[in-house]
Length: 291
Ligand SMILES: [Zn+2]
Image (cartoon, rainbow, N blue to C red):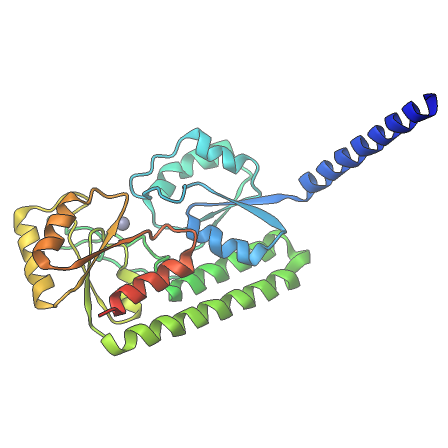
């Protein structure tokens, strides 16, 4: 009896020690990088594999333009080795001072470095008739995704140079995947160059640029359209024979549905903030390419 009790106690102690060491090991091995949006998480996870965990400030269905960061979201940064910005987006500017004062040692990298940004394609015009704002939706483009991924790769190698060959292999695979995706999308869209599509919020300017398409956005300066603005856009959509109306779920769709009925277009819901970025890009291409 005594021997049996001793065996049980010894076994328990061995298990407890194993558990303790197991936890300690996994904790000390998990380094973390924070990103702003889900598509960044998608690219970065492919590069870092199991070497870093990737946390994201924005949840999958949030609207980056209406996002108001609070300290709970920023807590993600506390345990991070670095923060990767997507660049040119309002909430990042809003939190940048908070981040600098709360986490002075956090390394911050801008993933938009080297992206050829578009100006004037996002929201309405200013009083002078021009819109000088940089279009922030740079991730809705395979061309840009390659630049974003290269920026991520360079940053990760700087953070963890001893694993460079591991990251280099993953990065090469990612670039091959992106090239294959670009080929698939080009195959769908090449025969319908210059085709127009409607989108409520102008989130696909870079996508339209890459594949020679025309984006007609109905929203005006982030609000519902005025009657005059809407009439211009309806005429434009009719003249260009647009057949697809993209709508993001986070926007109020009532005015969009009325418009779509009038234009006899098909409403397709999109989520440019989708973690499954490749699938989202393909869905958008296939919708525009469909008859
Ligand atoms: Zn926008």
